[in-house]
Amino acid sequence: MMVKICGITNLQDALAAIEEGATALGFNFYQPSPRYITPQAAAEIIAQLPKDALKVGVFVNESAGVVEAIANLAALDVVQLHGKETPDQAPAGYPVWKAFRVDANFSADKLREFPAEAYLLDSPTELYGGSGHVFDWNLAHNIGHKIILAGGLDASNVRQAIATAAPWGVDACSRLESSPGRKDRAKMSAFLCELRNL
Image 1 (cartoon, one colour):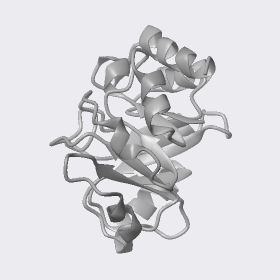
Image 2 (cartoon, one colour):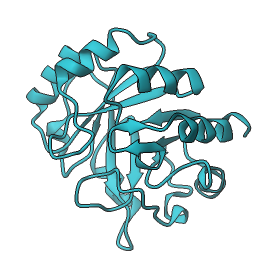
Image 3 (cartoon, helix red, strand yellow):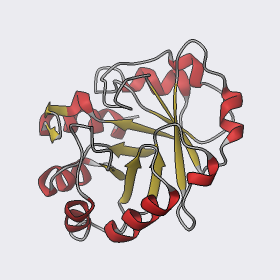
């Protein structure tokens, strides 16, 4: 299973996440986010990480040119489009994970409108992720695409989330922090331990 720890802002947290078993790390390039990281700072961290860990850039409503320029600078493996993007905002040459907010009006038909390698389903928030709130995981079940489950996941609920939605991957952020942008090693370890024991 793909396991992403998002909101990485420093090398210590990045290395700890990988040591504990994360297979992907998320770097947030959305400036209003408390987990924002500059492209240059992300590049410096990524240059020191193992090659086999996926480096994912999180973007919100940027043009394809801006996304591609940052992806090239930071040496990203995947771009995650987390806003209200249209398919023409997806950069060429990179796998795309498209995020959708899941509320009572969510329909899996929306996914067909945006060709992507995988679809990240998250709780609706004002700041595009990192809310710590869960949504109804039943809405993510049996969609027929590669689904990444996000929104309020931690050691206490990730097993139930996976049992309910059967996703391709999971993504955790705010519930694994000591403060926005700073991971709590114990919380991160407990979360990843739950996934190792599945």
